[in-house]
Structures are given as structure tokens and as C-alpha cells.
Length: 499
Image (cartoon, rainbow, N blue to C red; front, side, top):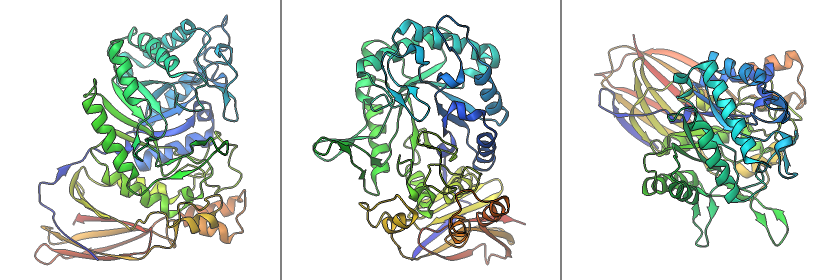
């Protein structure tokens, strides 16, 4: 039993909703597709995301500079950015990957063979970035582009960069000049590295962050923000087996990583730099069936609420299963990263963000599966019953495997008393559990069709709706008792409004 008494007229603590500052969306070329844009519009409307990070703005399929002796072509890039801004969404401009003609070696990543390596001529890279930034300023105005962030490359510490750390630092240096020479107030940062790395003592530290800041200090380069990707799961290369193995860390990994990251930045040469964790989730696995599960939703709630105040953004990778880093999804539910399936069916993780988007920016209580907020509309109580993997060594390759990995957990009772309420209130409960707001079991009952029919999709969209119940209450002496019992991995948003 978790018992909490909350004074609804109390001062509370201001909360910056860092969880919706940014979301990720795979590759820029995919954003030319209608299904991608439809999913993005849904995510922005219901989850409130404010910035979008993508790979591949310079990949061949965007045709920005298709050959060295050819012209620049911003048709596709402008089409994407026009659309994002029409949604109220700003781009985080990830400067990647190379046009193929600019590549210095044969490293090609993803199914579409993005060139992941240093340029064969850094002067060409400078011209590409500088010309693109000038074009963005000319189209959208300097005031608008000053509100964006520019980030050279993605995860140069792993497979996305067949080059040295020194070559990445040179890329950053050239990118700084290319961006800042357009306007000194434009923001740029990095190093956008992958998972935290294990130390001999068993602790984990952010990859390249300290070396990056030291390099920039020596070279007198600006760092407007520090970025890295603190997934609590990693796939290190095992020298003994010559294969990548999976390491799933403990329940506190994200909190410990973000706490350390904040300390590293504040003690470093750029203590005022913003911190953007611009990829994150329970794992970077492209076929992790836990992503389709209730587990992913309560994982998000627990970590987002616990880590509030540590970083400036914590961006979910990705908003939609319209994705091609691995081969495109072979079934409606295939363990993809997305908050939405390829047909826009809302997963439980989507509801976690939509619930968070409905809470106020004054927090009255936050702890142990229960958070209470106040907004101009009233009060919001967010409850969730998370547990960590029962067997972290198990497989997540199928939904049956994921169930074994996650385990059954136990139900949990919450007793929340709200004090200082008006005489009459409307109380609305939104519930997501195994029977409500989760379409996967219904899809399985259909026989797990790879490509559901139109009628089946309509049924799945309906099954993905949370249960909503509303009733009018009369608090006694301003006190309202909320007694809720949540099944394992269930979550509930309770909205209380004066009437």
C-alpha cells in the first residue's frame, strides 16, 4: 500500500516538461512519406513534442548535394522542415550523413547504405554545412533558426563512424565554423555518442563527453550543448566470441547515468551548456518485443519522473515504427522502437507520453509510482506500477519471450488523499492495463496478421484506447480519497477539475 496526502493549494515545485522537448524519428528521407507524417502529427498533437531529431539530412536520398560539380537542391529538406514547422515542431539539425561521393571509405549503414565515415575533403564538408545553414536562414529567418540546435553526426563512437575520434573532433571543428560563420548565435553541440561505457570498477561513464569538452576547450570552440544517448542496455563486442553480446543494466541505470552526466558537465569547462540526451528508451534493440509491451510505458514513467531536473531533454527513439535502420517491420507488432505502429496504432508507451502531456507544470508530489500535479485546469494524479525485468538474460525476440523476460509482477494498492479541493469536482480516470489501451493482445487473438485488413485495423485502433470513466464527487471538507489498485505494469491518469 502506498499512502500519500497532498495539499492541492500548496506551493509545489515548478516542473520543466523536459520529456517532450524532443523526440526522434529515424531518417529524414522517410519524412517524405504520408504515413510517417500522419504518425508524427498524431504524436505532436497528443504528446506535445516540440523538437524532432533525425539522421540522414545529407544522405543521397535527400539530394542536397548529389555530386561535387552539381548544384545544391533543398527541395526535400524544405518540404520536411515546412511540414514540421506547420505542426509547431522544430528540427534538431543533425548534420549527417555524407553524400556518397564525399565518403573517404566504404562504411555504409542501414538498409539504405548511408555513408558513415569522415569526408574525403573537409573543405567540401564545410561548404555543404555552410551552404545549407545559409539556405535555412534565408527560408525560415534568422530569429527562427536561432531557436534550433545543430549537431554534427550521430554516435561517432560506434558503427556510424568508420574513423577516429580525432577525425570526429575535426568534423566538429569544421562544423562550428560553417555554422557560426553564418551567425555567431546559432547553437551547436555534441558529441552525440552512444551508450555509457563500463569502467574496470563496474561503473559506467558517458562515451567521449569528457574528451570532447577537453578538445573544444583547447581549440577555443563553443559547446552550446552536450549530447549523448544513455540507453540502459548495450551491445558491446566480445573479443572472445567475436560477436556482440547484450548487457541489460539494473533498474537504476538511467537515473545514475543522468546524475553522473550532470556532474561531469557542471565540473567541466562548459558548466552552463545544456544537456540533451537525444536518444533514449529501454533498449536500442530494433527488434525488442518489450517495446510493444506495457513494460515500456511504465519504464518511461518511472525514469522520466525520477530524473526530472537532471537534463534538458530526454528524447525517445523513435515516435513511429515507420523505420528502416533494420529491415522495415515485417508485422504490425514486431518489437519496433516506435510509440506508434506503422499504421498509427497507439502502443502503451504512447499513452505514457500522452498522460504526461496532460499534467500541469506545478508538481505537488513525486515519488514511488505516484505523482500529483496542478495546472490551470485542475489537478492530475499519475499512478503506475512498474517492475524491472524478472530475467534480464532472457530473449526479447518474440512476444512470448518478452513476457518471460518481464515476468508477472504483483498488483499494487494506492491510497491518495487530496486536500484543499472545491466542493464539487469532476474526476476522470484514464486506465491502461492488459485489458484496456493495449492492442497487442487483440492482434494476437486475430491470429497475429502481418498486415491487418482495414476492418482489423479499425478494431485495433479501438482496442488501443484507454478506458475512461468520469464521475462527479463532493469532497468532504475539501478532502477527496482516491483508492486505486493497479495490476502489474498498469498506469492511470486521474484528472480532477472544479465544477
